[in-house]
Image (tube, rainbow, N blue to C red; front, side):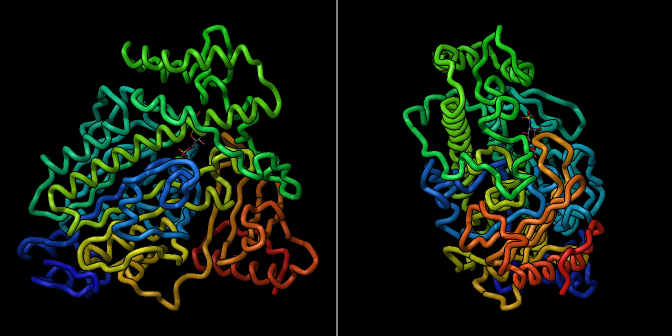
Length: 532
Ligand code: SGN
Ligand code: CA
């Protein structure tokens, strides 16, 4: 059985006809009688906190990422790609289920456990005859379901000599750097473990580029000669944006960005809030790794404590160190993505494999003075998304339609020739990959962030974004509306909500918000202060 980009079928179609008639995703038995199952493979690579400012096919200011760029060059780059809830666990749940957080039940990292028995795209694919595998970060508290094979890191994972939880429930420790190890494990599965009679869907989930940005010892020297320009709004005063002023994710703040934990300025006699967490991470290193680490950091530590910087000088020094550490971790990720692409190429798999690269959300690289994510502002609402397309898909270059991580599940189901269940809220991207420009494509995106009170103290909020405007409502312990004109104010510094002359656009955005909350059936709705 083989599916063409146009969605028509070559060879036996028993499974697909069955799926089409039932209105549900096909089941394993549907495929039993078919000849070789030649449906397309999927390699889905997702990183953590990798933002498009640090990916050269999106932004050339900071780093060259030749391997990630290869994906875009031989396929497509989505220029308007967003998440539904900018946080790891929630993003992963949206991506797996194709549903917003209030429907999949995983609204925040701190209180939720994923009901992993609910339908997900890996489960649908597996039931229809795919080999499905997941390696790396999972972060959904319960154990994965719907995979032929998985091996995950507990919680956030460790950069050095990390623990892995195996399918047996045993925890093992592997020696080395996590990004390499997840890649090794994934390639090993492709080469030695998968059932070659079946199409496969492989999910490679990296911890990189997550805090606290610990580089591989081989990459420590990189970027040390670079001086990065401060973003224009690094010294944002948050005027007119109360929630933005009350967060705890400021690079300049000693509490929020910890010089020991985040920037590795460790000395036994110095204290900080996250010192013991840093000690635990560094404590995982073997003597050789630790010696190389110390050899690199000791002179920087020496200078840091001698210089005794304060105020803006200190904030800018922290920004430079943050950028360097983050980019070193990106470099190793890019190398490892290259290893996967090389493997697929050498084994002639690119012709029948869709390769997807994305992150669980974007991140702040000093914009508004921040690191971290969570806000519906552009840097963290967006996420990179590039795809290398299998033979027969001629679409190349940029896709500008607004897409969201709830769209991945229906895309993969359609790619596999399965019907998209009606309770999935995302929309298949397949028409876009085929080069179509559907006239009824969504014009509004819906977003909802729940994790408050919690680390970084970003208030709960929901909102809508269309091609030009964004309306946000911060709620719970405050009641504040924000409205941005992204055309005249792309960095979202000027909240125009309630300003004279904005009445009409406010009414229109309120209408869009109400429609989105009704369409997605979000039970958390407050009174809309402006009616039609
Ligand atoms: C950890 C980090 C936070 C980060 C969250 C969520 N703190 O708690 O800085 O915002 O993860 O990130 S740390 O001290 O443990 O590094 S997420 O991407 O997993 O959602
Ligand atoms: Ca993340």
